Image (cartoon, rainbow, N blue to C red):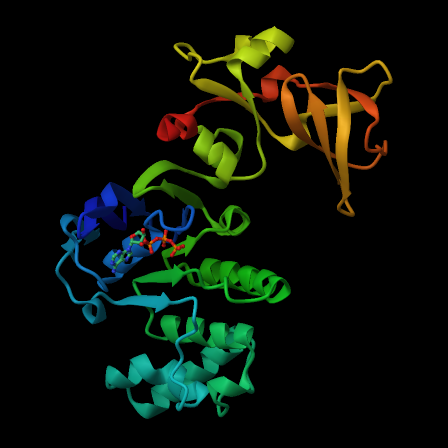
Length: 342
Ligand code: ATP
């Protein structure tokens, strides 16, 4: 592995923000740290960046131990949520800043800045000031500034969350494109599961200061390890064992060995098959039209289920319907959420 954080613990007073966390990034890989607010993502990114000190554990880049290396000597590029450009410097000066403090000759800085402005598709922006640019443009400049020095690792802390939906979508594709083109190993913090699914080669899902699951976007979506992951990534229908036993006992046949009542079945909305049936077992509670699909909530003996239908039938509130759950599409997951609650 290229970059590793091993057995990292970080406490703030009596509060443990990170509890023995280990993560790794392979060379060229785009890794997303995903989890709810307060789970410790930013703290981990800051420790890797060298902006905060480890209590325990180690940060390594290949064979080099960086645990006590100051941030500016790590050779990492960082982009924050709040652009953080220097307001009284031009765009060219902002992008060239890292090169200037490394005593790079002015002509080389100018050439590199021009090349980066092309790369981020803002070739006319060199002489402007940050205040004259939109949020999305400023964030592209922040990205150019971070990659100007050819960082060994690119760290992105919620870089898209201050932007509106359309700009966020555009910049998301650009970040993805740039990262693949340049091959810089990248670690991005986000609480947005859609963003992580779209961008990451590998997602590290965190909760309450620990890593709950690591895998490809497909792994986490199709094979969530726990109820927390199933709930946090995508929309899940979760079915308690007792209900499954009563209503559709064949679902229990797909339970993993050793699974007990503390396991719940997870079925994604697109895998439930819905059909109109006046003698059916379920009732439509709500229908939301989303253009390319309808999201239908149904009251079923298995519980309140969300179903996505693509074209075909239309449904009305109060209508009686029938549904089937293909058991091969069910994943049984450990119920870590109610354990944590009890
Ligand atoms: P968010 O998306 O809201 O930023 P996060 O997952 O990045 O969440 P962190 O910012 O890493 O979470 O914070 C993790 C926990 O550590 C939170 O409970 C936070 O209040 C606490 N924390 C973070 N920094 C400090 C600090 N300097 N002093 C005290 N507590 C802190």
